[in-house]
Length: 48
Image (cartoon, rainbow, N blue to C red; front, side):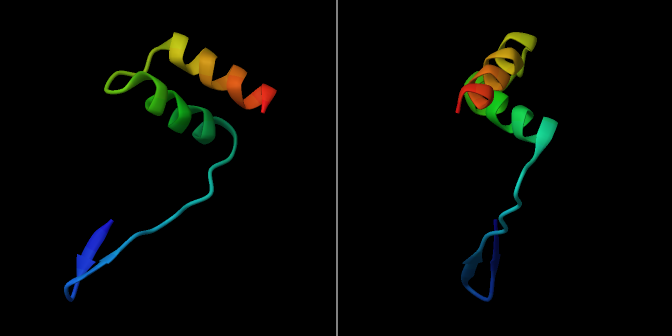
C-alpha cells in the first residue's frame, strides 16, 4: 500500500503454491510463523 498525490494505492498479487501456504500461515500465527501454523494452513487449503 502506498500514498501518491494524496491518494492511497494498493497492489494485489495472486499467490500460488508455497507462497499461498506461507501467507495463510502468517494470518493464523501472527508475528512468528511456526511449522504447526504451516501445517494448519496447508490442511485448510487442501480441504477448501
